[in-house]
Amino acid sequence: MKFFVDTADVDAIRELNELGMVDGVTTNPSLIAKSGRDILEVTKEICDMVDGPVSAEVVATEADAMIEEGRKLAKIADNIAVKVPLTWDGLKACKVLSDDGNMVNVTLCFSANQALLAAKAGATFISPFIGRLDDLNLDGMDLIADIREIYDNYGFDTQILAASIRSANHMSEAAKIGADVATAPPAVIHKMAEHVLTDKGLAAFLKDAEKAGIKIV
Image (tube, rainbow, N blue to C red; front, side):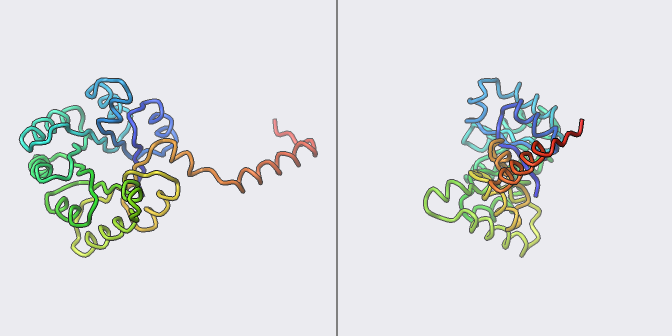
């Protein structure tokens, strides 16, 4: 499973990228606003830093305006994935932008039917939102499984990009189901390395090393 990092914080992206933990980046207007930077400037910096797809989202809601914004965003770098919402206008924009040869990430997916439409419209990525479904007492992983089954049934090339990841468990569950990509905040990726037994075992090893006077350098 590929890891995309869901942030516009270039320092956090750089740290994870240097560890080989970044296969791409996803941003949205909320994350750009949080960074306090110009969308074109920070997106260009991120694109220069990572080799994989960088999702940059349109803010228009009407198809023609989405297409215009998407084409402008796509000029930032060759690895831009234009991000459009899963609305009827968003699907229209997806079709045109993908036909232009651009990567397109269709976001805010909450049903298998929506995912099927996005694949038919030529989406490169479909972004089902796990955490927001969990907030409604629905199982977001069920949606990932449904989309995986449909896409495999018909050989769609659209990649499942599990989004709205809230925990390390979400990451492993998405991987087991077969999501192609999971995008998560840097803190969640860091949490994947943590386990209470690892901490306990390390503490015991260090205590024994100190007691035995073990030194390596």
